[in-house]
Length: 337
Ligand code: DAH
Image 1 (spheres, rainbow, N blue to C red):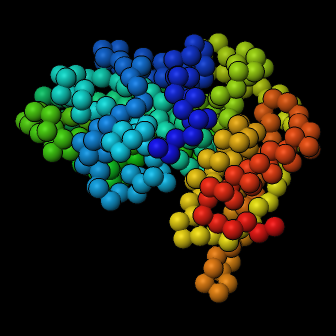
Image 2: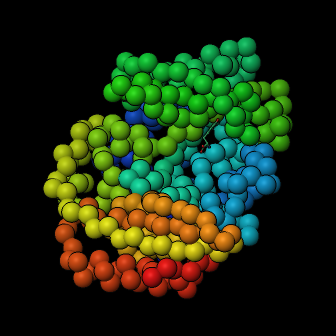
Image 3: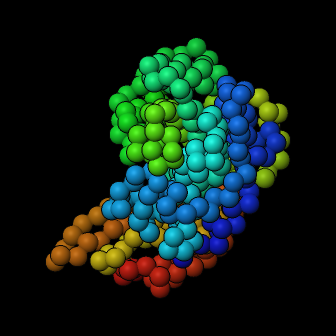
């Protein structure tokens, strides 16, 4: 319904299963923390709206459900927005300690650490005794963090997720900064009940693999994850290794100003630019905005830069002109020439 071809073409890439890829390496480090858990990493990302949202008690009016945030295959099927989408079916199938890794999809802004396709890993464990569940969760989180980051400080901050109660976000102190690395909590009793598990308790966590890989391998731009350039992929051997950047090509900036219509959607514009330029777009950022006579004007700066080659001015100009034409015809706005 709102899934461009360049996104659909990513569905079979499965970077999390690609041997020696940084994302696969991070996945395996986490796998090794849970040797007796069942592992699932080839479940289709096309999931029922029910599994992705309703079963997880995500309210009907939650923004994450909107067409501007989520890719819909049909009215009741989405590209999963998180691996939590598999929690309830696993629990109903009698899986009581499991890991699910997979590609997830969200419509989002364009910059060096956002890409509409990313990877997550989910861990869930049902425990018989409720008494120690929080400390069991905490010691497992500590284990994962220690395996990834070595001996470093971490903190669990109270947070809210609809599907866990209580819930936490976990930050790690790494290279002088607090980095948010995962969400976790105690699975909501209503979910346990709907899975026929009243009387038992479970903890769950979910973490993004791309950003972890970027941090641990010093990868400066998330688009590199998708590169098949030997100069990138040839650097890795299945262990954590600092990436040695190859020469950076010069950027080319283009500005585009427009009057916004009532149904203007920035993420739809981003999809057009990403679709037209492939991975040549590095960022799209709002430079300026003003309102006059009740109408709003936005000016966006589009930065084009290739990860692996130089391009001619003519190539970028033509690509940008095509983007602008498509924006004019598909997006609710009037481009100011
Ligand atoms: N699904 C959440 C997200 O994508 C992450 C998450 C939070 C997973 C808490 C969990 C959890 O299993 O308990 O942001």
